[in-house]
Amino acid sequence: MGKRPNPELIDDENPELTEEWFARARPATEVLPELFGAEAVAHLLKPKRGRPPKAARKRATNIRLSPEVLAYFRATGPGWQTRVDEVLKAHAARGAGKVQAKRRGARRTAGT
Image 1 (cartoon, helix red, strand yellow):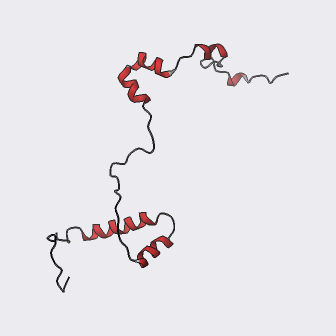
Image 2: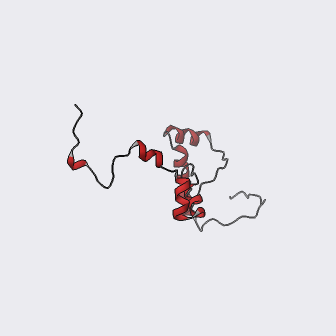
Image 3: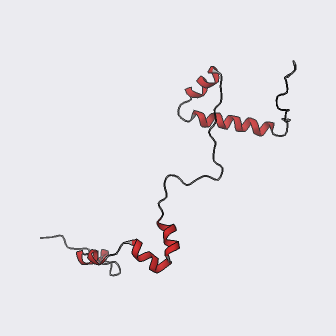
């Protein structure tokens, strides 16, 4: 004999779905335009791939680092590039306003 249903778990507002119910069911692409309009549904049903974009995205670049610096940060394990970025951001924040723009192509003098 089958297990008797627990009367406390029976929900009259959400009846059990039957084969008949599934036979009458319609896909969301048919039902939603009637409720919300075609334009809104096109936006709602558009597939979203990957992570949501960040407001301030990082940019890929090439940088040459000394072997010692590279070895140090790589030895700290996964996420070493993020740590390099954090160190450079902290340095840039400390030096903000101190650095003067140099003329492009200007030669370095012995003192700089």
